[in-house]
Length: 418
View: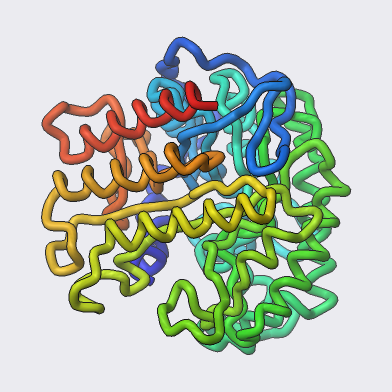
């Protein structure tokens, strides 16, 4: 998973930029049409509704809002507002001490209120700009601690536990770990934002609480272990925050034992349709990285990542309709790599056009490209760690300028089609 490996260095690479959260903030650029969130987004059938009207969106991801200065938060959210992107997905976890990031939960059942300042500010600023947030509560990956940190805390396994699925996957079954995760979910959903004076569960700016970012359970190919955990935790989070949406945050793997194609197979122990069907899960999440998943000509001669991705989207939209649940393509990305079927930026733009068109024409509830970044504290742009970076308001000659314009136009089309 090349993208995840690259992201592993992100926290270290930005250590120099993690200055005082109260740093002077830039005035965000606001696009007319976005206004402060009023009312909670709800799920009805295979779509969302907001204040009695259909709600469809083109949005984005920016994971680092919970760790950075006001300037950096304003820069990203201001750009999102300027692009007309009404939904941003950002991390709401940072577990363990001794790493380059500032932990929200330095040790079990202990929460650093000063460290939560950046997340509080991001929620506050998003609300001002008319942006809704999707907040995952734990990471499958070791970035910002993740499930590995919980396993280390309670089982003493200090190695890279994802390398051994039997270690990593005990996150889903150990009673002590589950209790700690529940306590963290309770803390986040019930905490009072220092800027808004609202509990997170009472703030319509927060559209969704996600159980995790890309949960997998490779040790149980049947999908039963992850399904049982998701059933328990989705019901628990829904009880904590009944007005917000709840999603699993998984990648959409189908869990089919008789299918050799990796994303459709049971290799990762994820059965997407069963997860989406859970009563406390409001919508299905889907990720799309055909190059990282081996769906490219370098790994499979003759495979077109663009066409493969379009079919992946269509399959999930079809199955979401059958399940009567909304479907959001909440992460997707393509990087320029001639050997993997994307020769240049023009080819990448063509792929993004095809995928966003598939969501729009197929009735998808929303999509969120990976990843919108903006300025860091010295005024330069956030580094392109994984090859998927999109920046707004840059030089028209910038390689991603056309992509950013596409996503802005797509967001407008999704809103109009709602």
